Image (cartoon, rainbow, N blue to C red; front, top):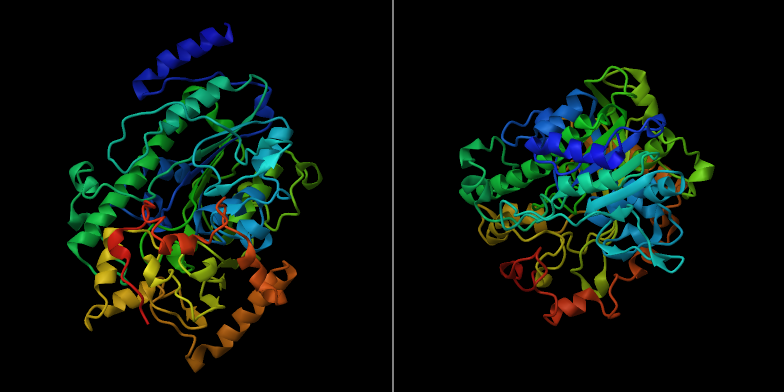
Length: 529
């Protein structure tokens, strides 16, 4: 049967599932695994069904977890879109990536990505919707770099709510599969734009059939109000939308006979776009969902693994499974460690005892301070504690009040927390999300996952804090972190990716950048002392 005829028949066979394209299995491509990397935009680990959540329905994520491995302790080093994705793509921590440590940056030419390496080594590589962003990827040989492969974005659909993208993610994946040559394994990046804000208010209730009483947990740093619950249901509606396209992709691979030899990785880039989470460095900021499925390569599927893994482990994993040696990849020496040995082990719980911590941190995220200053942080997470060092505690951690606390997306929940200020009974909600913080923070996340009780000033925990600080600083020095070498100011000199040459802060103060889509006019409250 000719390939074109096969594709025609496959499309017809899959139409009942809503697919418009399919491909046949290639025997040559089966020698190396295909890779489907799926990343939600702003989703916290607790809101996937496989982790025990029942008010957000994620059957596709749960399918990957039940037929593969569910990682209970997966973390991004930097809880913001661009730096988090840079860590995934390069296998290096954000403080090792020069300009790419920051949000809205110019991606340094010297750092190759794993999709670029796969392209050079025989893979057919593409993506849909959001790849590495936001920022400028730069050029190579006079052409714009494709950090996540060639784009497939032609298919559009009518979204179920105004806040949802019109990209037909699964349809674009089908187009990618149809375009794939017979003799090549593939690597596809499903970059969903959901559940990034903005949301259509009450979409979860009016279009998702949910009720405010469905929400079984309100984090204690927000008020428990109908507005907050409604906002959470709108977020859940968009998480479920991400999952529905994932389900279509899995079904497409299965109908094409490709699923068993495809490494499917499902995660998110940072925590949910709510106060005290996205853009910060607490437990729900950096702790993310991660499920991996690969029938041909994961031993004893259905396992739950408690090892601490970092996003920097993903690039070396993919390269190893693709048979690309470090010398052939062209990547800068990676910091992460491949997870392939965990795939092969067949064990649950703690598989590799040395994976007992991760490092986290950030420099500059969204603008909101004079001269576009950041809010530098470094931290370390173990099974027992989260330790954080705030290098500039005199600055506002979510951005300055006069710019609307720009490192916190505009939302009904944000407005509720802002309105809580100057009321003795509710001001704690403003303080926890927008108030200034001490130089050091220590939380016993084994019993305080919400990070509500700072133990840094408690003499009973001084020994633990000293040990964590010493371990963190020792590791960061080995990694060449400029903050540890007395050169941290260099991170703040990297310009935003803006051709005007002006500070974004200045443009905000001049009223040029008020319509960002992630900040509400009501967020601007003037200067706060």
